[in-house]
Amino acid sequence: MSSFLEYRHAAIVIDTTAVATRVALPANTPAKLYVALVEGGDSNVTTMKRGADGRTREVLARDWLLAALGDHDDVMERVCIASASAESGGTCMGTRGPSGDITAEQYIRKYRRLLANATGGWDGLMPLFHAKVVLDGADDALAQSAFFTSMAEQGRVEPWSYDRKAIRLTPEGDHADNVIQTLAHVHALSRAFPSINVWLKDLGYVDALLTRHRRAA
Image (cartoon, rainbow, N blue to C red; front, side, top):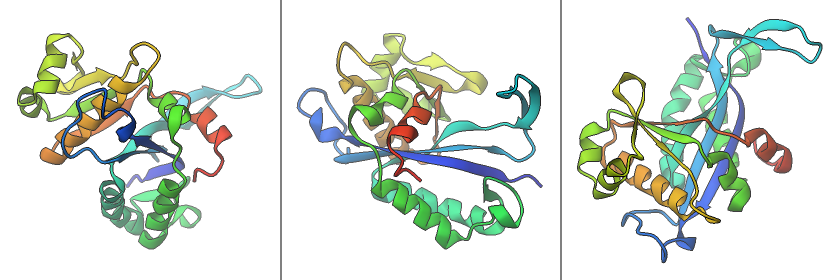
């Protein structure tokens, strides 16, 4: 049986009140919207990677993924659910076996510290610029949302594999109001329709973010 391996973590906190007077946000938008990221991959999935010595080797595949999106309670609720997999060995830290084992309590504490040290401002937003939000099982929900219906009419809701939908988070001009607005509406949609799965693809700048903000877990 394979395990999901978590290598590194980063957390972004977005102050939605900074744009609330300029763009329309859902009524339930939290003042602080957290984006918890994890660099991870399955223990039985490999890829080829060229090392510093120029040689290509087979290594375990890993990628930056969305762990949770929402206010502090939303994220910690997802973490508490995921902690059961950590307790059973379905989720490990970096490697399978005893060295990667983590208890549910340790897993929860790790993410609690992560949120406490979340990065805000432009540094926090940078990994999200030009990334894609991918929504699975959201067709009916998107059709019921005036915000997403308008985006679809503008051609900003794109087809993705397996009938999923994708929305690119591209800033307009010299501000990121529309990126924050889109994430707030994605959060509201996922709260109203808990069966929707939300991913972030094509994340960038996360390594640089961790270099500048070493407090991240």
